[in-house]
Amino acid sequence: MSTMQEKAHCVFEYAKTTSVTVVQIHFRTKFHKEPPHRHNISRWVKQFQDTGCLCKNKSPGRKETKPEVIERISDSFFYGVPQNQRDVQVQNWLSRT
Image: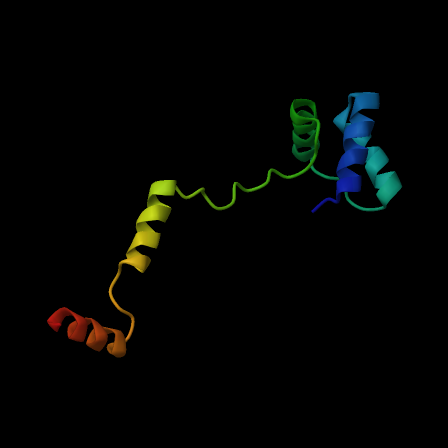
């Protein structure tokens, strides 16, 4: 897994040299480890050209709940079944009077 600094270095070097092989050589010299695969470097360059960013795409997160659903659920709590036995007894007593 490459760090953001390593990805940025690869994109910057590619912009200067336009050669993935040269990028890999410079990467190995600078970071003293195996360079990323040429497909990864090409993908980072394309991503930077398309979006201007090397960040991962954020997940969309939780979907928005429709107002009708919120109203239906809140109504079911407000007008719903009594929660405990005492409430049931009180409602029965009130319905008899």
